[in-house]
Length: 468
Ligand code: F0G
Image 1 (cartoon, rainbow, N blue to C red):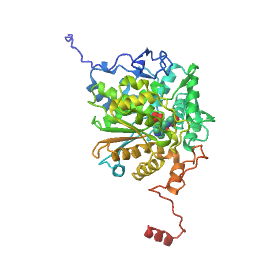
Image 2 (image 1 turned 60 degrees about the horizontal axis):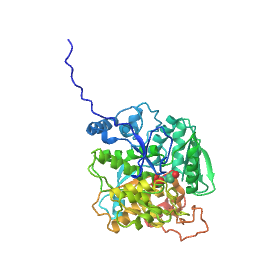
Image 3 (image 1 turned 135 degrees about the horizontal axis):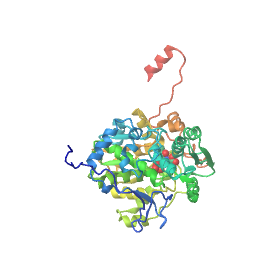
Image 4 (image 1 turned 180 degrees about the vertical axis):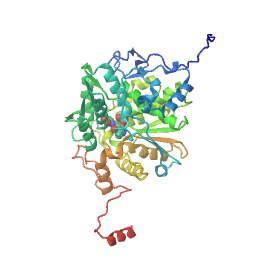
């Protein structure tokens, strides 16, 4: 006996076909996913991927599916990026290149909260990832796309972390990796990673911005695939951090999310993730997104401070940024004077009602030590967040009881030279910036913790401990 036909409830969990799209509202040109482009072919504007997520109907089922994948053993489910594959521009057969990125912890940071004048503060540590920085969530997507396109070499310009991450993922995919690094300006740990993962390392006689310009000039070589954040597929991977954060917070939207800013890919990606979730109805509002730069490398903070009242989105695209020709900061990861993704980042900040400010070297260094005192630690660039939050509380932009999440972007072991100099009292802006001629006052760390030399006797040790 045959059963009467029963309609099976099939929740619509797949969006319409994604496209690459120019972000300029005057242009809005669309391109296919297989077009190997990094800027709009029509107007030269930045590209992003429109995943058509508004066509996803049953978002509740989608969230349940993501939750259940956290306990699955399937390779893609274990990745904190591919777990969210319904919102990524890849089909189910994509040859995913993963190192099980994502799944990064949220930490309560009471000492940093007190230090910044907040009742509480949460840190999301993207440095707890396969290569020790937030780049991995983007690289898994960019390298997968490179493999799909049949690239023979993957290339990036980098202050060190992008290179280390690309080198690792390219090695997993058996693809050649070439990294352009500013000579003498990359931390030893980051450089060592790129060497170990087998990348061809080109040390360029110039700064990061020179490396970035050269990389962009390679965009017409068809067998080379560029993995910097001008690559919209990389941003797709990085946007999943916003989804993961919201799942970890049981979909409670924080008042503020704060990130350090360099080339501006991270802020662009987080902004895109939150805005998508709002459009899909997963969250009712987006958190205010704020970006913190270092004083000596702060072109976007300078533009933001001159903008005055919030301009309309169309006029945002007409703004011009004044690049910093000789960016200076000890936070080498964000020593960038000409950020390529600034338009997307600015749009995300303005749309969300956030801020863009900069902090001094001393503010950044002390904030970094405070994050260390939590037992968490991070690389210098990441600490711009806590330094910036302290400033934003002091000037009344953030209220004491606001809920704030700071994104830490790199692991403390990425730059141990900086840590050691801070605690031993040898941190000056000329150390390692490549501008030895521009000497500046030493930074006197408030939280210095220098090793103590002691004789090899019990007495000597007890005496010292009693004194301290
Ligand atoms: N924090 C760390 C640790 C970084 O490595 C970077 C960027 C940033 C913050 C800034 O992020 O560029 O998305 O605004 N590092 C790049 C690199 C430039 O080459 O590793 P962004």
